[in-house]
Length: 94
Image 1 (cartoon, rainbow, N blue to C red):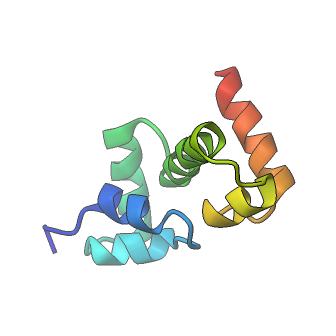
Image 2 (spheres, rainbow, N blue to C red):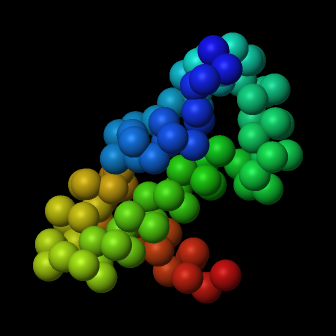
């Protein structure tokens, strides 16, 4: 439906495993059209966007809480701590 907001959904569910196929479905689109439109609209792939959202949340945890890295990785949807750190460093270099 038109009122399904992809970005809102990603924000709410960023700690879970988000299926891009499901997002496309919810928008009533096939995967390849969805992927193309997403990239055209936001200048990055949906997967990249999801990772960025997760990393912004990681940053908030690092700045404003005392949780350890394993907890933060779990809460932000990263498979493990080292994947989170690698992704974080990559984003910070840009």
